[in-house]
Every structure is written in C-alpha cells, then in structure tokens.
Image (cartoon, rainbow, N blue to C red):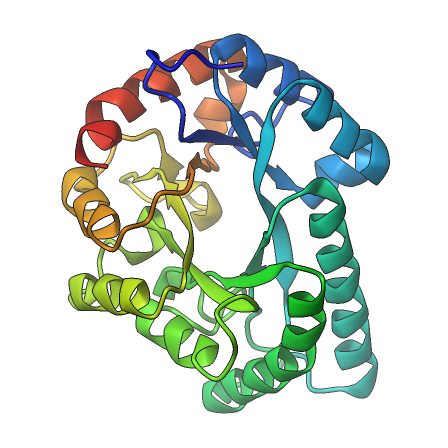
Length: 283
C-alpha cells in the first residue's frame, strides 16, 4: 500500500514495463515500491489464471488501471470477424472480473494483401457498434488507442486522437472512450485541441506515459523508453490532460529491450523518480 506522502498515489505499472516478471512478481514488486495500481496485459493474466490474477491484485491492496488488450477488428472474412468478436467479448468479461472499467483497444491493421485503409476503418466502426452494448452492460469501456502512424499498416488503422474520438462519438461515454498515450500522440500538431475535445466529451479513460527514443530500433515496437530518455515534452501533454479534469491513474508502459534486461526493481525505482520529476508536478 502507498503512503499519501509518496506522490505515487496515481502511478500505475503496466506489466509490459517489467516484461520478465510473472504477474505475481509484478504485484509484489509494485507493492514493495509503493505503486498502487497495475495495468495488466492479458498474457500475464492468462498465465496466472483469471480468478487467481484478480485475487493476487486484490489481496495486495492494489487496483487494476486497465487491461490490455482487445481490438484487432479489421478482418474482412467471416471467420476472422467472428473470432475477433468472441475474443473481445472474452476480454470484456476478463476486465470486469479484474475490477477495471478500461479495456484498451488496439484496433488492428490492414489484413494481408489489403491496401484499403478507409475500408478497414469502416470495419472497425462496425465492430465497435456490435461490441459497445456488451461492454456497457458489463461496466467496461472500450478504450480506443490511436497508435503512432508507423504502425498504421500492421497494428492500428487509427493514428490520431481525433480519429479515435470520431469512432467513439456514436456510443455512450460509459461504453467507448480513448486513451492518451504520450508515445503515440506527442507528434500530432492538433494534439492540444483533441485532448481538449476528449475532455469536453468526457472520453479520456486512461493516460499512459513513456518516451519516444531515438534512434528507432529495427523492431519499431521497442522504441518506447523511460520518461526523460527521449524527445517527449511530458510537462505540456500532462498539463493538457490535467486541464480536462482527468483524475485517473497514470500508467507507465514501456517496450524496450534495455529496460526489460535491467533489474525490475531498479526499473521501478527509476520509473517512480522520473514520474515525480517529469509528470507529477503538472497533474
């Protein structure tokens, strides 16, 4: 449990940041570091077992800030569509069991051989229309995550917060929302207006922070870095998010080989200090 004097009351450890740890180890490490929340990836939940995972977090006195991930909704064949809908409903059920209302959605890229981005985005909109009522009925939000444009072909056909909000708008705010992830949106020249819009629409369900490191590695997924090691201005983005009235957790999600190879306890110590220095003063 955290002490109110630590400044870490809103900090959350995403389990990808300590990728070498099992869920039990991540829970124990977060508790020892005074970090009160975890963002869970489904692989770690499945390894532990859903009910055991929920109990591990609950018994440690921690909370689940989000579950990652749902999505991959761009399939155009009937089998692919059915499989995606089934998996996403299962993910919604898992989020509800874990006690989080945020299921982060990576919407999917282009199917093999397909170059029709507009068509893929239309399919995402259609699938959201099918899933949103189920999510709302279970007290879970489908939290759309726009990804940096370098991932548009293989992981997410939405690249901006504005696109994510356009997809969310037809649905109730308690069923479809968005995440502001610094790595993915810092470059957007319209980011200030879109964060303000997201706040006005009450759509911000999560705030994730990590840095954008250079040079970009051969595996672009691993370009995420510890706050302060890259090119992102955390002060300005955090002030934008705070100005909307967002009071939720701030989740640190890092994909980085050097971070993963480091002692996880040292990673948590560095994470907490960088959060205090670069993010907390602007919340």
